[in-house]
Image 1: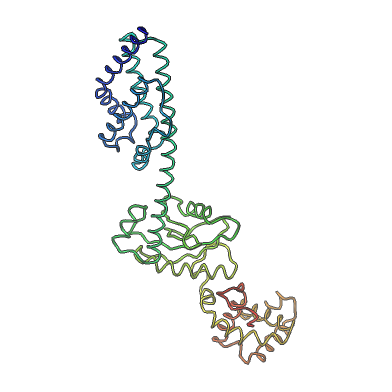
Image 2: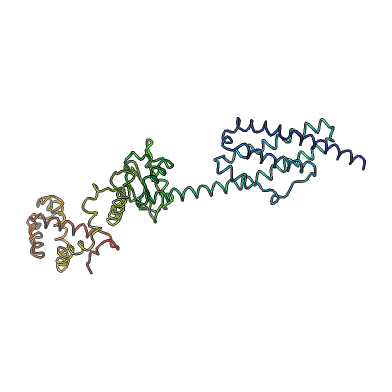
Length: 394
């Protein structure tokens, strides 16, 4: 009994000696943190001192009692969340924590030797300290990762909100410049809006990541996100997509403050490219007037009725007439070239085109007629859908 009392008194003397040196050890630890872990320079000294005091008191309690509190009784969530918010990586946070526990251990061993503490007791309490370190480390890691995920989701939502406002013309000049500074856009540079959809089996999230990577060669800037079930954003140059299975509309270059106008065009071009079943990136120069075929369904229906419906009564021959007219316009009104492609006599081609004129009541040498027929033939190529006139006109 007397031996136990002597051991308890010696242990209490060790703890008292450690408590007297808490501030001195804490100062050394703070200096060491700033030197060894640069990310901790963003953490105010008073916060470090507060956490050090809490760790120190908890460690003294473990040394005195010999047992480690249950994980649910140790709350370091606020520390982990604060460090994550300040950009301190998890590895740095754990290094700092283990450095603090290491300093406490070294202080304990030094004072235990000076006060002649029983070696078995020293081993027992040192083991308890490391059990405390393991328990707290696991909790810190778990909360830190949760905080990082939460912060990443918040940043993604904020990024998407800025991009949405930019593309839909809902931001003030101040908001545009502020967001551009945050997300690496140059307000003095011209950007093209892009709107895209997968043309293969790739999901929107994975496609967005792949497309953004392709839009950033040689240091070029790009900002993309999944918005309204499409991939949308701004790029500094036309994307080179390679084998990526995507269909995209690309608006004209414009200032950031007017990029919403480019975005409207990009949306129309995406609709047009999708309606024609195309894969790749398309701007106005690629689709030209064909984009209007998709955008003007009523006009398309009217021209289909005027120029192609009369051919339906001819059955299979009507299909041959349509094919001949299409090639006649595509080859620049070259009878011989059409005959060569179709493997028929040139008089057969002349007859089919003459029959077309009879059925429709027009002349193929009229410029207006040529434009309208080209429009009707382009409308015929569209995939049936809510944005395209149905080829049958029913």
